[in-house]
Image (spheres, helix red, strand yellow):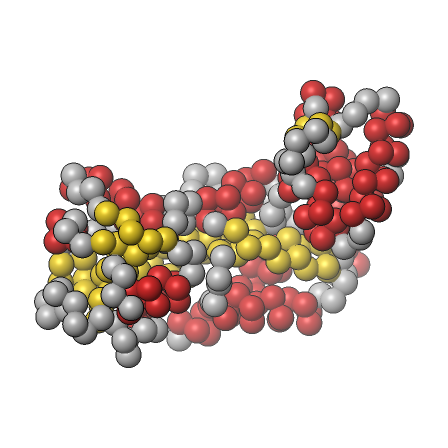
Length: 294
């Protein structure tokens, strides 16, 4: 039994797909399949049910998953312990970010970290915010930049942006002449917004529920540019954060949603007690985001 076999096993278990797992570990799908088959022969049990389109763990696979993760973590801790003594950081850093991320300080932090620690392999994955936070909790990701309605329990956070929601409309929209709107005002107009699982959508849904408003969600898009583009073409009122809307001020007017007082957050999240690679990346992230804020 080899560590790489355990790594491939965990990748397939988390991705639920051999092709995506192969992309994640940077080898061919046939190579991943062969190593998993060899591991199954050594263990004397099938780890995956391959009969459906989505690969699922068998009972034996479920029993093995936590132990495989623990073995990989122990191996990583060994390298980190030596690295802390020698001052050399090696290993892998897996970073998640929201779909369509254009937050350049995150990219600046990644570049600075890579220059300082070229021995660390960096993986960057996109997903919606809910799944990013859960992957950080489970250890599938080391840290992630996610949109939040509130700071998640049990995780460390570095808040990057805290902004109110706004309604963004083109100049010829009936709401365009107002200084602000209420959630009730939006109830009579189709809405274009982020999908479920994003921090901004969670903030909007909670605010509507608190006011007893049932918005008509006409269209959903995972990227702010897409939401703005749809609204600019008259397909609905865009619900965005202040900075998202500001990037499209040439074609959309931003109106404060007066009774949606809870801000939407954009934050870096990670588990406490992580190794030197995570601590170093957080240090670079604090510096990059501080430069932008200044």
